[in-house]
Image 1 (cartoon, rainbow, N blue to C red):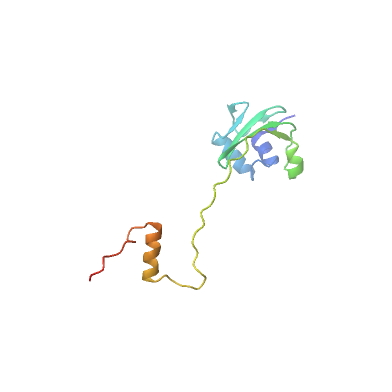
Image 2 (cartoon, helix red, strand yellow):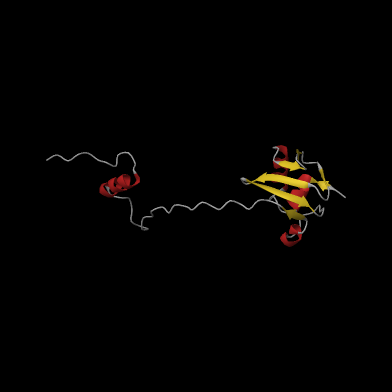
Length: 129
């Protein structure tokens, strides 16, 4: 038994939609046993599928062929995941948030913010004495 590679990738929930799976095949982001394939390529048990999607590469070995989309628990039984673990997410820098309703910063506040963030114009003019 075999199934189309785009259909199988979608059925086991590696992509959200079948059209995304089909586009990945068309763009050369899907390899079966190391060879780039088209969307209609037949997938068989034991094939190694490499899918580049969302900035990472998924490597799975087909253990069961399905043609229709199934639940996540059943889908996980249809392949053996050999992907490297995803890289840790970078810490997001917290952005200073003004109190709600505080309105626009005054000229003085804006200059101090510019100075703090190193933006041009943060120095201001020299005062005359």
